[in-house]
Image (cartoon, rainbow, N blue to C red; front, side, top):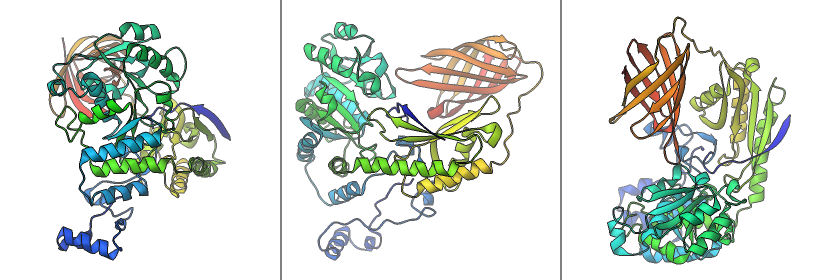
Length: 538
């Protein structure tokens, strides 16, 4: 049975093999200039991409021990974002044949981005995070060369206001400049906390910020009265023209080039007020200022321009229809399987704007959970990445996975459908985790904990309370702290916490063995990897 549900998909909550431009190959036997001239002569003077080399089984990634994947998860950076368009590859390849003055190139690109995207100006950046950082610097010191050279130590405008609902992992782009974050929760607070120290207001675009008292439009109105620039982070959004955020009063808007635009993965766009865009570029490479590390090559810059030009020519309605046909293929393959339901989630906003398909089932019936299926797909051949895996034995047997078609290729839908069907009909054997029996060790009290990271150590503290097998308490880090909970079965301890760290959360899962007044084991920190730990009861 098909269900349809509206869902908000955050810009980065959503990650096949990318096309690769090969080298000249046999031309390496002769001088580069001769190789280029020979190639151009053979092609009638036109720059044409060399043929794609490699297969799914044998390619430049497999030769270094890396397994490419079918991407049914979305535009996650960790699995290479999006696949660049042919027009982008061609632009990057063509750009590589010329030498240009980068300032002149960026002026040319700036005018084109502004015209295409419905704003005054634009610049190419090395991702949206770079745009956030460069916008902050531009709003703090403009093009004052003395102040820019003194960053991050000396600055007059050193505060950035961020609504509490806009705090996120990517406001690191603000913090890395040394700016102080001023959180606000009401529109009155926005007005009250603007001061001569305020450089900028940062807002994350999402459906919740589209209306209400703290809407982007309302915040921009207050900021305009006070003469404070507003940066809107619209990284994964579709770039509607004229730009909707500029129309709502935003001064600057940031986009990722490697998401829906399908430009170079390490590219982005800053759009908006011309003098601030040019100030942001002044602060970036090739200039020796704070943002020198954000070097945007001519290939990346012309690649993102090509992606924007192509965006306004693409048949987006046809893309949406194609994705729905692919998802329907997967749904149809699941029909008749006991306990299986399929639900379509329709996007509510412009970020990651594609339908997704949730396949749900009872693992008591089909004998495999969503997390087990997800791991099987990722470890299998072909390797398949999907999202939304839920289900854990034995306590949560209601299971599901989610397929996002955004970065799939034609034919991927059949591979995913057949592979999922095979796993659900022939799951193999999975055992419930073994829970140790016996009297639980006593762990109540204070523990001095040493974390042994891959590089360096950290000193923390557990303050634990115990009720039989159940543990509660506090996780006190070197800087941050969080509530902690877990369990002790015989001598086997497991503790978890979610440590809030400035717009982000570190999720800790400690597992280990308790021996009297000592304990040790491993700790997983999600995207931050694994470490080991040892603890002594205080």
